[in-house]
Length: 392
Image 1 (spheres, rainbow, N blue to C red):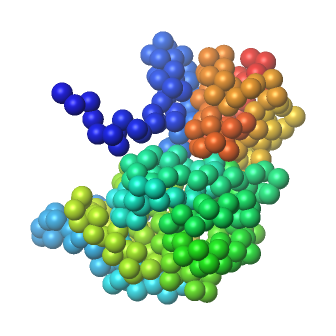
Image 2 (image 1 turned 45 degrees about the vertical axis):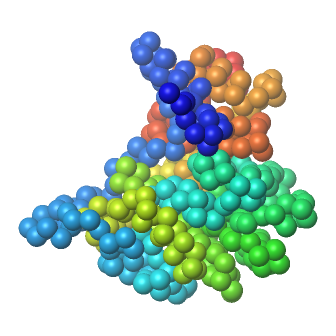
């Protein structure tokens, strides 16, 4: 029997598989593991959100239980359009420039399938959300990792991209606020990215999954679509997962250029039927509810960030204070040669799971990502364990 396609066999293992296996083994052995590896929110969705879904489910007609429209429920598309106008002062047509998704991860992977042929280059900032790396492999595209360096605020220097890469590239993917570093964009950076994209005829993919999870009131994330002329070559992805503590709901949407969305829709119509309509109905009400649902979540993560940063101060694990996201990016102690070595040691000796930076791409080496998915007491205990074990 054939073992699998060339595409399957060429895929690298999930970056954190080794650490996750060691975590599961420790849990089975009865160890109290503090898991801050995966960005899996521990908070419940704000109280109105389950009620929004319940009200849709209580509808006695069959309308929400049938196959959804391939281009998504109109109410959700219109709510997303209103959100863009209210939040970013950007106009997007709910008929042609919004497409609901089974989470942004699904949408990005299928967008790569729609636009990458073998030999085409996708420029991805690194470190990055690991799903980008696997999705490029599935699409048979070639990856170019554009480094995000701490000395540059974890923003790319576009001058580092070789001319031959730009000439073969089809798209450039950016993600701000950034997972895993917590870094944020500037308008000047976005303008420079658009200028390069126009010069080399690149598609811009903007992932703004954390746009509403600012941890300081002085910072508010931008949409790439705010840059004049950007919509002509941009698709932007948004997710409900982290902002509203809805990762298991699998709900998101894409916005931007109508032709790019049509290409994505063509792939989707051949691969899925979209999101359960009752969840789309609830999602529309979530977007319309605005900041009243989000601010308590921001406060939770802000408090956790501040506790963790304070506890790590003066240790060998140098934490970088983020302005947004649910992560703290930290440089590993000098005694360790790799992020994987450090992560394994922390799990073995302290019972704490951290995500090794190498799992986020080549330029994540030397760091670990700490997810703020435990309450403040567990965060404090995790640091105490690492200090007491002599690792930091």
